[in-house]
Length: 315
Image 1: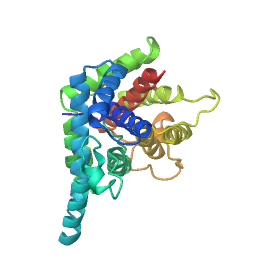
Image 2: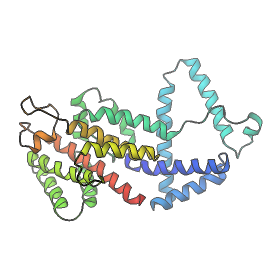
Image 3: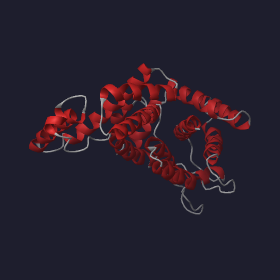
Image 4: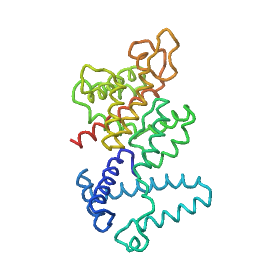
């Protein structure tokens, strides 16, 4: 099943289709499908079978999300919409004769990227309030399970703790480690993972914070600027302006996370209920971690790992 980290492949695939349709003035499946498939597979150095699988699974997921919204319409409106959608799909296919008889689609077909972006953005904002970024290695079908947890901070924490039991945490550790430069940063990350496995969560949390800050700071053009939230916000806006919606959502997830994690706090007042960087790094925290805070940081680092990986591919 497709994972969020594979959504970059889907986005590229869809954008190839858009360029071909703009170039030829319409969608011609017999001409466009092979080109889009070959181009996407070549761009990501994956097989055509793998590219096709990712496209099909994300397309179905987008269709399912849209169908859930349609089901909320009154029955007459729902039936009218479905009839019109079937008509528009047939007319959109210029390999078939229907458009010659019926004309062009009455409305543009839904953009699956827009559907998924709306779905993901609402979830990004919801889980970030409790200190989590979206785990990019999560199966897209588990989104429904996560969405059912967003009304309760405790349920969100339980979802992620359970999710990272076993191989999922080891997977993001290996993947994140491969994106870290050899030397102190990678060694710190290795020791953090060892500390986590040994149940030494407090030292793990403190050191992971520095690893995360280092990864984010790599994207700051001004080495004198240490505003982590500013970097995430600026990158999210830049990627969205460039039409890279999936990558912009990754940065949005980081921005929403850092807004909470780096929130200004008065040491003369009560410590925030949610993990706060300033209380941790300035040695003022009385918050005892049961491992959940560490998982939040490992998770955020995995999001930055995906961003770094995407950036290298784009160069």
